[in-house]
Length: 331
Image 1 (cartoon, rainbow, N blue to C red):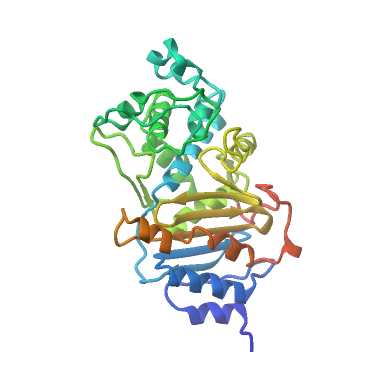
Image 2 (cartoon, one colour; image 1 turned 30 degrees about the horizontal axis):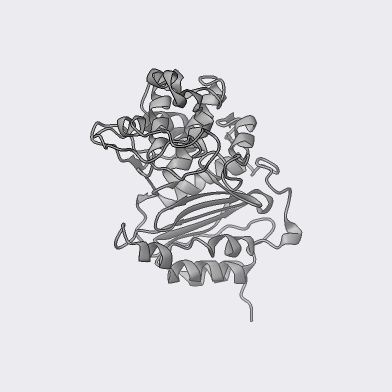
């Protein structure tokens, strides 16, 4: 006999809470998602549908901050979106030599902020390493024409921190805290810095799973939170625009056919599916952060999206890709 959804969630135990959602989630699919999360050594999973929390599960019953790894990059992209929204930045196509004048006199003069945000700057691996991540990025050689090739790059993206600092007049981590996290009610977070105190854009942000879900909810609700437009509709459209060099990638976010996704090493995931009004977060603390085997076995990279899609029948889907359509109550 199939148990009602609420009863299923109560039987799952742990730090699980449930509220009714419209349309209701498929109970068997929710069981499969939570079971697979447990089997892949997840630390936490959160599911929100229509702005309401269906599951919040900390598998060891210890809510805490968890390193999000490369999900950090995606949050940094939202800082750029906030700059656009408040008018501190005019365009994503601003040349990077505006911020780094030494680039104005060689082939790097063609690199734009958009190129950096889409991993298509044309810069190769740095030849030297400095205590400052920004200095290391500035030393990277140009190996391809900007905009012509995709190379997933944890070094060049560090330049975003300096762009934000120059435009906002404060470090990236403080800007995100003041302009995004505080309005969202996120009070607990940590952003690792490099040897000279610059926030690590590549993978330095730690958040609780439920707070990362709130970031996803902001996107689902069209950039609006409690009546305030934190991210403009124009920016959200840019966020989802496929880059020329990699059609599966937007602005530091991976693109799904029906949504967007922030991924991090060792299985950190934030999945936003607008048509299903779904936000799904999965976080995992690895035993060995540098283990490729752990990343492959327990990363939840391939299974998460299909399991999440099964939560809401396709016949009940709304408009695919429409952030803010049917905005959640109270947002």
